Image (cartoon, rainbow, N blue to C red; front, side, top):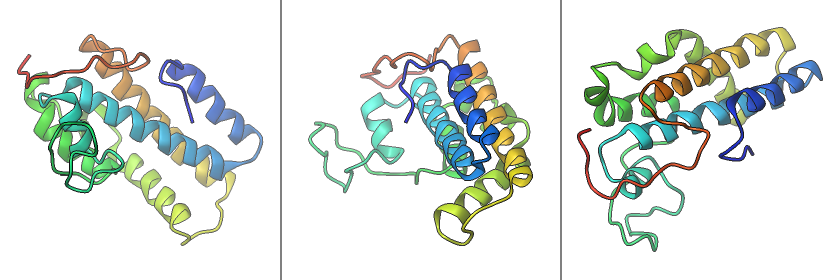
Length: 173
């Protein structure tokens, strides 16, 4: 949905416009998409495993145990979800950034968990819609989490609003 080079502030303005237009489901889904994408990109950028291999481990599409034409053999280790990204962060990033976990970067992990729960209920048909007030709190939780991950990556000299530089060898930097 969003271009890689679109600044986070512009992405969040678009999401807020859907809230203003009383389309809370669209706003929530866009906020979820942006948050998960930001977390995934941060893990790839700050991780230690070579980029292509890590992308596959994080659930790159078309990974069925083969190399998917990438020339990189890797097994999918994580499902694409916020809670799995927390686990991947612990393995890939935590040691490199002074022991900081993803749940510490996000700060309001409980608020994010509530947002994820609503997202899952909507996506999997348990709920058909949601109220504006209820969704707004959860959209804000997603956007705060996204901003915190974005700021944390920037503090590590990684700009998540730019294409990521591929890492071909395992790194300990």
